[in-house]
Amino acid sequence: MSIILQLFFNGLIAGAIYALVAAGFSLIYSTNKFVHFAHGSIIAFSAYVTYWLFSVIGLDFTLAVVLTICFSALFGVAIHYLVYFPLRKRDASPLILLTASVALLIFFESLILLLFGADVKTIGLIKVEKGMEIFGAIITPLQVVIVIVSFALLFSLWFLMKKTKIGKAMRAVADNKDVAEICGISSNKIFAWSFAIGSVIAGIAGILVAIEQNLEPTMGTNLMIKGFTGAIIGGVGSVPGAILGAFLLGFAENFGIWFLPSGYKDAIAFVILFVFLLFRPQGILGIKKQGEKQ
Amino acid sequence: MFEAYLIHLAILIGIYLIIALALQLSIGFTGQFNQGIIAFFAIGAYTSALLTLNGFPFLLGIMMAGIISMIFGFILAIPTNKLKGDYLALATLGFSFVVYAVLLNWVELTRGPLGLPGIPKPEILGFVFKDNLLFLILTVVIAVITYFVMWRITKSQFGKVLEAVRDDELMAKILGKNTERMKMYSLGISAFFAGVAGSLYASYITFIDPSSFTFLQIIPLLLIIIIGGLASLRGTVIATIIIILLPEPMRFIGFPSSMIGPMRQIIYAVILLIILIYLPKGLMGKIKLK
Image (cartoon, rainbow over the protein chains, first blue to last red):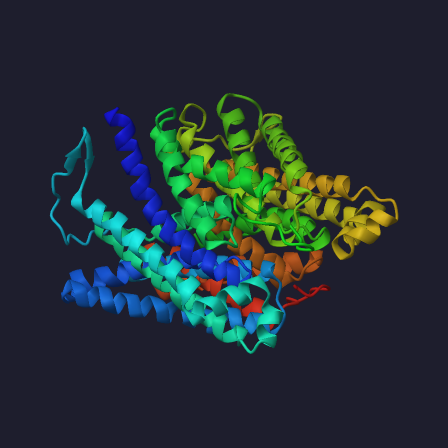
């Protein structure tokens, strides 16, 4: 019983992080209609910026977090304007944008390697604490914070999308860009906004991972693959679907190692990703739009 | 010393040329944006390494490397044939993730992250290609054969059908061509040569581990075929030489060796972005990237 509960907690914590990655990613996908793999580099860079501000320069932690969040928003918008925008101007297909985003991901991963080195870094904000025991399963206070922050952010995102003007405009562009433009919504502005908001969520995910785990140059790529898989499982064009898919992935990975050696944790994600891409590319909640090519 | 270095570079160019030509067939001539070529390269390398390590001759190893990769190519083609554009790219990318995870975790077969050391140098009919110069000759021969086969394919009726699939698949279907089967053959042939290149790579380096086959490796290959120009075989050869030699001067400027790897990736990524934005046709391309 306690094993089931422990696996449930592990799945919940993993899912909470994946959901943040997937939510930002699918927000950008739904308005921009292409796969932005460089989302992963925003996560990794934010983690390293927090590390640099807090552990190297020695700023106050709250200040470091606030600066990192501003940085990640600027970072996302800068990528949009410097790379994706000129590509869109020459009518590049989603395929070319995807290729460009893979190039960006590799560029930033190598840049982190150059700037910070390949060795694993730790922030060391909180001393290793003994976790709380709930019916035999162990969860640390920090992990509780991660789950709470994640849920709070996802709720705010839902609120933003449903209740605010900018959120409604985003959904309009996601649904039908041309009609939205006729109604006076500037789709270029909305593209930039979705990059800013998606990147802030990615930045916070990066900070959370940085406090709880170690920092490695490859962390962005790894988290991106997980978040992307979650988004594909749930339906990449739908933010709630992506969140659902991310939690499902977190549970699948952690319950999967009950049957398989723990090294196969990543393989579980890849196999699920592959199966969904082949047989249900629109995901669980995604609805294939008429006339849309697969 | 310098001579040995030049021979090493020439061998790398030869191996990259084989796999770039294979990718050119997939992307340039058939229009199938296959990002999983690294997976076939890895399957070929492991097949050949495992066979030769267990005492089988090199010729069998390299043939089986091609054939097993080709079989995987056919298998991958069955579900991915219906996919187009970025979904095809993602599914093939997903395939390379799956292969990577299996290589890392099937420890009984691949020794996982420890890799396979001590892969024997190629031996054909009692003749050992121990010297690097001899290995270069072997690589050049195989690269020339690959080039010739690709050239024949693209000039043949079959090649024309592939180009028709790329330009207008529906039209090719209307004209009675079995486009699904054509795409399957194209992916299979492409996988075959990628597997052969993998076999050469394994027996040249004599050590392989999963980290040589991460999806990062796709960037220099994509760069080669995009710079060379889609559907241009001659462009592919020139681009391979340029791309492999380009980061080399860094060694002489005096960068520490730990920095060269990431610097190379950065250079490749930046050039790829510049080409995508400003030079969508590449150097010698016939087709504009859309």
